[in-house]
Amino acid sequence: MDKKTVPNDILIPQIGELLSEGREVELKPKGFSMLPFIRPDKDSVVLKKKDSVSIGDIVLADLKGRYVLHRVIKEDGEKLTLMGDGNVRGTEGCSRKDVLGTVVTIMKNGVKPVVPGKGKLWKTLLPARRYLLAFYKRVIM
Image 1 (spheres, rainbow, N blue to C red):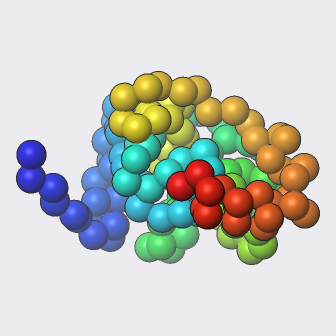
Image 2: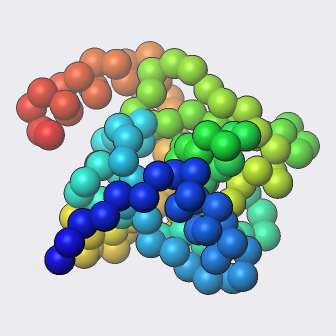
């Protein structure tokens, strides 16, 4: 099968439209920001538009034309704070209306479906995350 790469500024708005129609969309993420739970070029995610988003959900968000697949770590009314599981610092802010969809399934190696957890333990490991990710990238990846 031929592999085609479509720029995010073209692909993601189309995905947003499909999600808003109530469809599920499978997407293969490119970056490393959700390591170790979502691996680029190995795993894919199934997204769905949900009525509500809560802390721990992994969401696809439109940050004014820059798109991220990150976990919600804080909510304050309509405002959400996002952070990638593979990040050791740095967060993004968005509003609930900027969320295009929520990850409902992670397809490990593209075939094994896994329901994503809320990442509570991983969040508490933030101070040690740098070392855990370094080990993962050097030994396991």
